[in-house]
Image 1 (tube, rainbow, N blue to C red):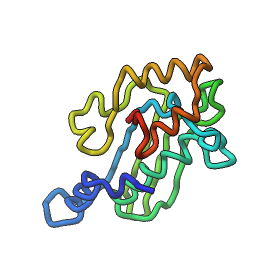
Image 2 (image 1 turned 90 degrees about the vertical axis):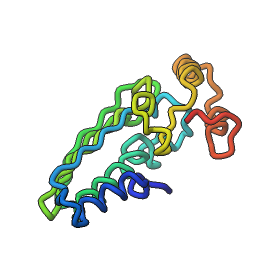
Image 3 (image 1 turned 120 degrees about the vertical axis):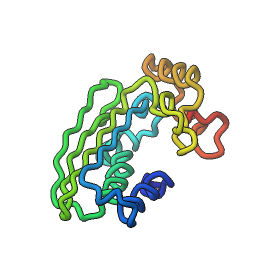
Image 4 (image 1 turned 45 degrees about the vertical axis):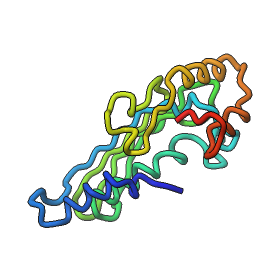
Length: 169
């Protein structure tokens, strides 16, 4: 599994904070993600918390790993909140976490997966960082079919997979 901690942007930021760049040690890091994760085709296990489903199990490790690398310490305490607000999907689609590290650094991570756009639609560097929003109209049509109950979710999910016929992101 990939992680934000392996992305060139996070690696470079962590290096700058640890080298003699004059920037200094990271005191606070804030990571915010907004996506349409809950509105995309999902396998049953992706929506079953008992099987590791929902945005907390599927997405928060990416952000928490990036916080760990940027802040440079071990997590000393973690507090958070999760929200599950879509009756068609019985799994959390939102989380916010506050992490205190043993070296005094603080980190916050938040991910709202109920959005109708993805971050790369408004930040120029998104596609270069591998955070592509794909075709906006195709994603909107997919969301409508999922919410209306007219989607073949298994086929849509297979199309999104690596090498699939029509990746959505």
